[in-house]
Image (cartoon, rainbow, N blue to C red; front, top):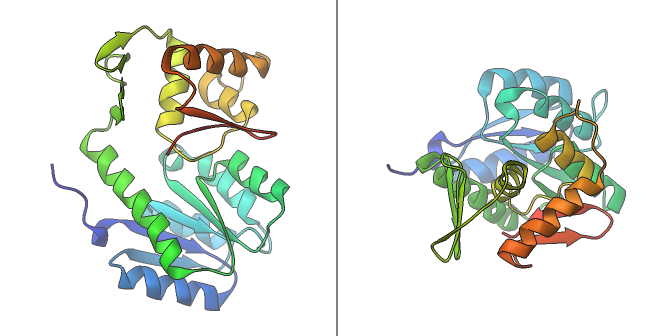
Length: 230
């Protein structure tokens, strides 16, 4: 199966600054991507529902609905649960970055925008989208393979047993590389919002996964949570 052409990879940029939207649209279209823009969170949600973007760029500081809430609302919609969401913001505080990732963001980039660096980031997400589309349920990274269809994990070609929740946690992290997840976010995504388990349950499962795979694949981000290696 051939990779998706860039002209079919749809990007939505949401920002209340017109100059930023013009800059983003010009540079991304010059790279070959299909781009739409919105000047508010409300407009962004309306356009996203019809446009079905593959990647969304969101500013945090916007009137009415800010970027964090916009991201959270998008993630509540099933078809946007795997859409790439990147925050572009002037906010440099750690708590803003944590809030962005906890709301469901995949990346956090501070302004002023550096067009070539931003395009490089977006190109990496485009490649991931193409790779996932080619083989949706098989992940291969270095000596590790994770097969969602058969619930099989292999290290150096040898099958390693993973109980269901350990497998689901590993697969979820591996399908969202570079994204940092808090314990609470992982509990919601893997165990469900209605299941009452303590946050340390995540730590226990991560420890068991590391015992089988080693320490290299999952990183601990102090004070924030966990992320899978890029």
